[in-house]
Amino acid sequence: MGCGGGRHAFEIYRRGADVVAFDQNVGDLAEVDAMFTAMRDEGEAPEGATAETVKGDALDMPFDDASFDRVVAAEIFEHLPHDTAAMRELFRVLKPGGIAAVTVPSFLPERLCWALSEQYHTNEGGHIRIYTRAELEAKLKATGFEIGPHHHAHALHAPYWWIKCAVGTDNDDHPLARAYHRMLVWDMLQAPKATRVAERLLNPVIGKSVVVYVRKPRTAA
Image (cartoon, rainbow, N blue to C red; front, side, top):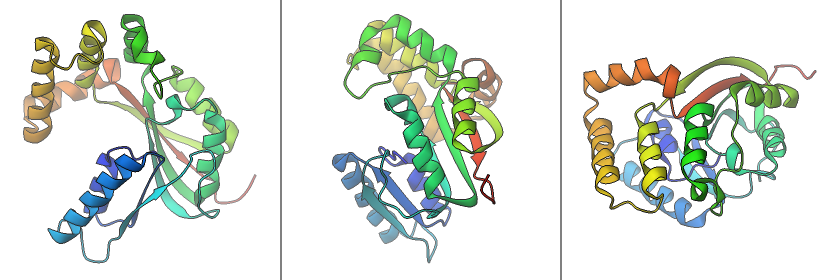
């Protein structure tokens, strides 16, 4: 739900699921579809797994009720003026007993980004609200979901965005932003033990995202 560049969709497909990558951006979807094709051609997905892209609006998704066993809604609700309407759609398309992973920017790292840069949160299509975890969970619970566990993620990414906000969100050539970005790419490709341990320790404090797991009840309230 809001697949963007497809990072989550690719990994889920690689693990053997039948994947629907859903977004309203046709450019992103074209690139995601091309990657799905390349993964099939290279044998990166298990035999029998399927992957497709679908364009649409998160407030009115073109899927039947109870269509999906699992949904990943990563970093989408902070963009939507009518976030509770999208949560109702998420609830609708999940099967009874189905699980969703919902992620939004964590309160503290996001609050610092807003303080450092007005452009960060006023550009078209940008973030329009800052959630506390309690607020996010309250909205999901009011929608009908059962609230499950949560965790924080991507602590090493938070300083990158603070740097970007400080030097200009469009200033990718700033030496500090460029150097930190190279480090993040190296870390993602190499996954050294030292940075993995550091991120696990830092996640509860400055994790860039908070992940909340919810379940649709097996029987209607």
